[in-house]
Image 1 (cartoon, rainbow, N blue to C red):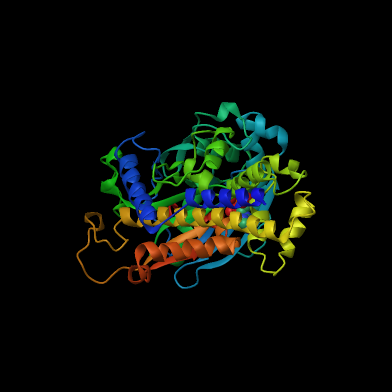
Image 2 (image 1 turned 90 degrees about the vertical axis):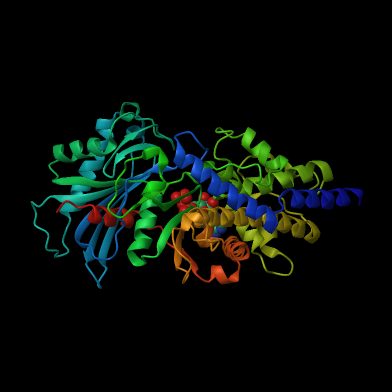
Length: 468
Ligand code: ADP
């Protein structure tokens, strides 16, 4: 009995530690806008890297012709072909093919890796049996989504800073990956050039903008999290003299690394960070993205098991990092059966905890709710922070550059498994955006779910930057 009281007490402490009152969220909004400023003022001026993409021209639906994309960002790569019909007819068709990358190529030489990719791409191009008008020997244009840290030099070139996600093709570091690919394509006898080299978040923005020209930002909340948006070129102080035809440039925020003392952080978050391979890094990501939410909840439950004995003697599995994955957590959280049957099933099958009482199952659902609600509300504050920076949050700040008048419609593309498939997360996020902006302003802000379209987005950017 005393132990149960301790469990309830721990739950309350955790809930207080995760509190996201509207006042707190407004502080996070302001901190995001301030850090964006700082990151645009100088390199290293903020934890937000605010990377220039040199994309100043987003596709708008008028593009026409056949374009290709290559998406490299994990253990698979994808090749795509997109046929664009120009104004009115939009995307006529697209084909995608996934290929696993042979393990040995992930740690071999850059020549072997790019040769392999170029050969695969060539095969894909040759399988063209779609009756498109493209001439065989015409130069083809490719959008290259390369989701590793790159120092961009132009819209179609960039130097690899370092590999992540299990790759270690060391001789590619410091090289322009677009040129590496082009050399390999030439060698393979493929007449194709890289028209755009982009991070996948920029592809997401491009795709959403193609359908809806009011799109100003894109956010991905999946395993990890990031955001990009269209900034006024003259507000990018660290790159004075940059000229763009549209007056705007897409900035890749790398917002997973955002940090502010206003973020509600608990001892569980600190422990998670300490035990991670990248401690002190990606602080925002560790509070809001799918890779971590389940593990925050697991840490709370494990400490309850130790201090309040809520699981008897069988809690060993809860000591294993990342055993409680976010989709499992979502399934428990969304269990609507009165006796929490799904929660019992997951506890039994996935955590080998077969005899958990209904009372404790309810407690577990509460923990999931607290973790997810905090994550969703902080992500919402981040989004409003972007809107504030570009004067679309209704506050009519100096940054807006517009006189008072009719409010402008503002669209934010959101992608990623957490937002797309975890409905409680999505509801909490949507609700918090309205809460922060107020009903009236929120009416002009549309959060638009975009299903994994960064590959198509890259092909659209190839079209927008095509030299044909
Ligand atoms: P990635 O970010 O890995 O490229 P996704 O955008 O599809 O790919 O996101 C996958 C992540 O989304 C998973 O790691 C998981 O954390 C989360 N996720 C996927 N499905 C669900 C779900 N039903 N409920 C909660 N989280 C989910």
